[in-house]
Length: 262
Image (tube, rainbow, N blue to C red; front, side, top):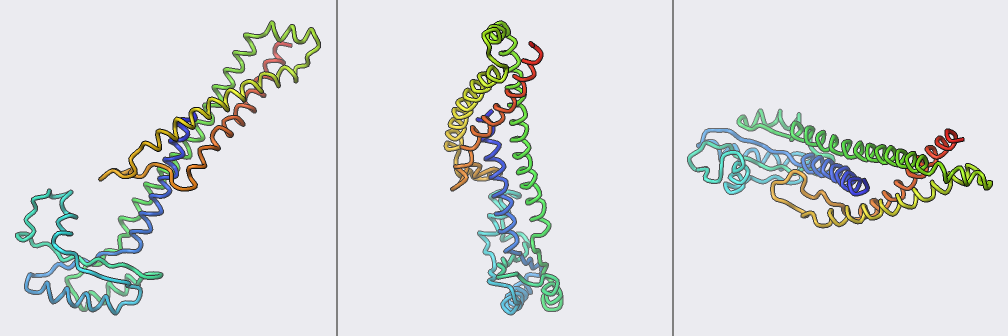
């Protein structure tokens, strides 16, 4: 369970990073698409660049070259795309500065000066990506809660079985004067220590598996699933939390069984 908890934690943290990175990257950039007849394309592109340079909140703007456009279209249309034979629009990448620019005002200016220009501020792309990453983070947190619940249930069943199997030993201990609290502490201590040891082993195995994951995989959705920086310290809390769950689960189970055996 500790092994699975490490991966659930890594998934939750990676999803949080993705939500932040995707949202930040897309929020700071926009794309201006110019669709115009071939004889007007250069003139409209020049007009658009001039307009963008005088727009407050625009840090920089540049026209994408043919190689960059081909790279963008390759996943959709294949690597052998004949760009020179297709009426592709001209793309301008806009990088925002500070609080960004007024998208509505820029669209009005473009409509008057560059009729073939369409501004895309990436809002429709940013929201689904952030929502998907947020759902993944919530799934990771839910997985951690489920793992904790299953661990508690397993320990409770194990404590029930151990106490029931040692009913005669418990009876002898009572005959020699041992109180139920003493007997319960003995079982709780043993289960808590074993859980701490087992969770520690599982945590180390999980960290080893996370360490072996590739940092980046081209085209992979979950590239960078591993932990980063101070996040490598968080898995060390898993054995401690597992021991806490074991303590309370076995303590409640031990008291319940001892009352039944009284």
